[in-house]
Image (tube, rainbow, N blue to C red):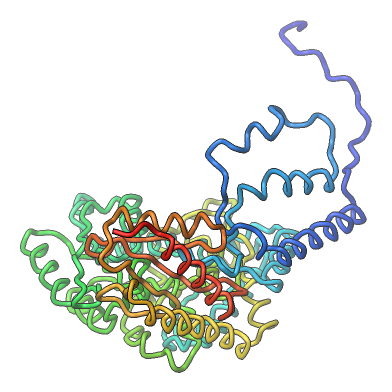
Length: 489
């Protein structure tokens, strides 16, 4: 170093990008072939990964390569080292948690999204991304038969969030902004949110992030189908009002994770309206069933709630992420009140159209492409056929279950919208857990459990893209084999 300055770097040749259009074409073909082969062979792979923690590090070099490697070499490593560590969510015998769908139209759209790679936080950042999202949310809302007040034609607003968890948080922030209008900031610690003990854990996390210190998790009971009861909500609100707190926000669920309970949305919304609470409905898993006229009875009362969310990534052929959230007429203004932040470098003549003000992060993908592609390439008729197939698979499983006295439908639950909750009759917790592990260890299917009233309950969640009734029967045969092989009391 001379005179306090680092020596100048030696001159170098002009940088030449190694991947031009023809390299893109070659890699794209190789990847599409790899994916197609993966899909074709997925039924021969164990559904749940069989590896142990820490398996991968000894398989890979300790440092990144100094010289470039070919796509063929990398895909060979995927097959040899990555694939064994994959739990195959796209297997037609994946029945764990809830499904994470993918389809050729959606994946193709995601390729285009990645190729454009726009960061669509504002209208000016890519007008087509903002405008297509608004159009698609109206299209999808109409397919779901949502109230006019959720559509742009009725003053509503649709926005694609990353997850239902983010939608729950955004709704809470909007609710808090509304509740705190004309109140001193120090009253913020008095805000209260409400949900049932069957609501998703994201409600609790939302309160943690939003600085809402009071969350009333109201107990549910088998006799009520594990649903949030309006009388219990009313009593909790009255108690909090008497304590000088500020009831603010309530989450109802259509299709809870643990029991697929459907909360009485009209009654909950009526309580919320009476006390000025924001009513949010989480239909992350079950909402896509609203495509079917025969399922509309599960979706009553939405015209009285403030916001609604469903995930076509769980039930409608779109790969993660894409969570569709709607605000009822005028309600989006409260989300903007809570989240709008526009520094000088983001100002433009159409800021009122920006989606950045309806979400927590600034950046956002062009997710609407996936929704647009699947609605066009399947058509409404094809999408309804897909949802009806899920319900037919559910019917087949329930019929098989009814013929096996060693299993019972979990008391208080009803097979609904593609989820069946059942229990090993008269079993101890250890016996139920052992059976579940034995079933999953076969690699021929995968399911998970929850607890209802303290009892281990198996969740059979149907919804993978290619699951057909024959996959249900094959999975049932494995379950029967493991049940027969289980140690007897």
